[in-house]
Length: 91
Image (cartoon, rainbow, N blue to C red; front, top):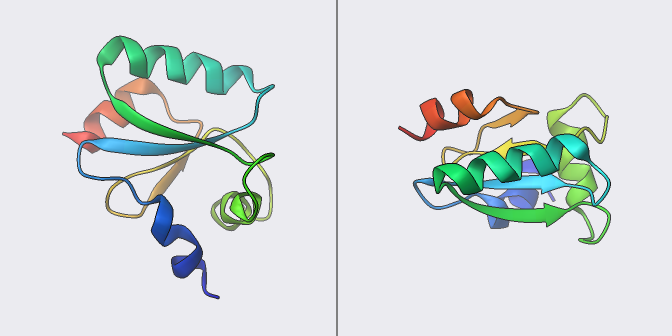
């Protein structure tokens, strides 16, 4: 299965993002808080709980399981993005 096939179910609808996280990640909690405050729609996927998603994160991060990794509607991703970048990419 190709990387694109692995990612396909996690590409969000326009105006939202998919955020790969872990339960212990402080950066993830902070970004979720800011997304909630801005009313940005997101789907959270915990890579420790959803099989195959750690590999998706690794593909975007040179083999590292770095979170939060955010996927945008165009299929591109950003690792630990600032809220300003998320806003800009969605507008």
